[in-house]
Length: 151
Image 1 (spheres, rainbow, N blue to C red):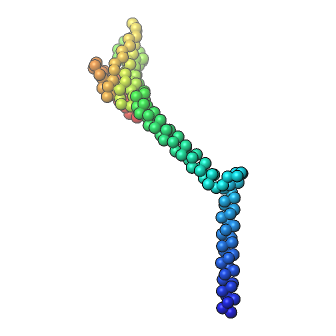
Image 2: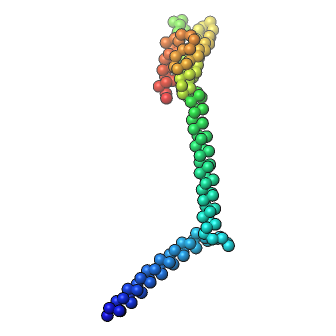
Image 3: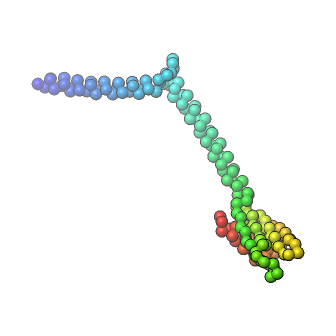
């Protein structure tokens, strides 16, 4: 009886090992399907070299994205416009101040003053959200505040 149990246990153990070996062989065959005269080592070497090439490409792309993000701060990102009526003899708010600023609140403010006798344009430089050399009107300051609120 004891030997029968021992033999049955050995057969069960052999069956488990056989199933396990067949699964490993099937997995190996799946990995090397379509590969001629090369072993699993060659397939894995090719996969590793491909993975290294992708890793290098990802690092290059990451550097490029960081550079683009840095450069993006110097492009026009903020825009604010205020329409107003500076003269009592002119109907409607046909004058305006337009602020164009980058990510560091540097840029320009363009003001157009419309009157019946003509139209005048003024451009002032902005540095850090404030007028650089010339004093800003309340409309120009309002346009800068509107632009800063956009970000």
